[in-house]
Image (tube, rainbow, N blue to C red; front, side):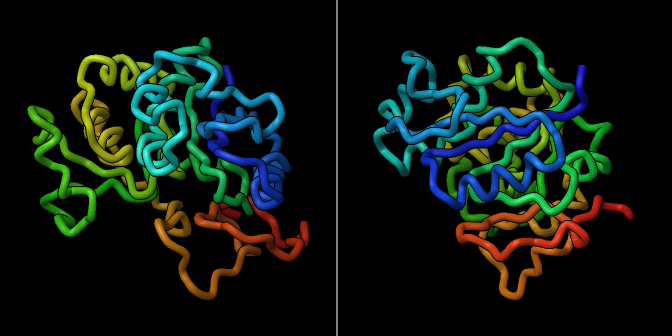
Length: 239
């Protein structure tokens, strides 16, 4: 089985989405588009959460018709996707529509290959209580001791066994909280405590000024069209 596959999460099909998809495709890593919107504007060959009624995602987002709910429950679309597929890779990387790859995703995986769940930042209340979504700690019920946020969900890498276990636990736990808090917390409760990926330094929850997209890395958020990046500037991490 292959080591890594990329899940391209998207809710529309703009020029920026195509640009960012192409940045991943040039590395020849298998990509599976996952559509978590409510319309027909999806990438070719997408697995469309909206076409699978009865899933937790479909119920929680009213079939994707409430954008804020679709955004805050994007992990539910990932769980629905894994339950609909046989194992395809040892690890899956969540790449939201506004992420851009100037490096081989396998290089991004390398430092955390031995872990079942990793994120650009894995935050816990005793470390960063100021994280906005920790306001939902009361919603975790008995899962409070495992509270952990994946910041952001984009750039998170989970093993196949971890993702399947998450999908199974979600059906019974039904935690009503933000996706980044739900996935990180359940992973810890399952015995897969999330770790930080040291190569996630350019995967941020908001855009930082002065970013040089020619420097190798995975970038988020990238919501605009970029100048062409010379191939000579695109290298793999660690070179």
